[in-house]
Length: 153
Image (cartoon, rainbow, N blue to C red; front, top):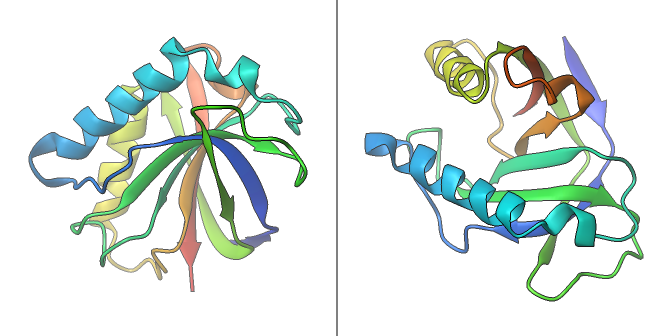
């Protein structure tokens, strides 16, 4: 089923370079950015948050999932929210999505679900802005649920 989500502004941090799924590089880079985001207690410093969710965004693809892409972690905010020092902002545009839910032990369930997504060639992926939402459903790392939004055309 395809759903449409409105645009959302995020404040957080980006890798600052593109990563790739080759040789486990993305897993290493993305984990490092999570350490920066969490270890730097960035979420509490973001004012004007719309809720307690954290987004992990995959965007600016050079092609499909086998090509380099950018990665960003942040929180949804009001349009007029100020960006704290050391952070940046991106806006996920309104897009159509297919939603896939990762369930299980974190962070393994996320990687496992992405590997399943990559195997399914019949998806009509747009490679726009794909993202995961870490909500209250992800609080229990032994039994987490994380919705993954795949941009589709």
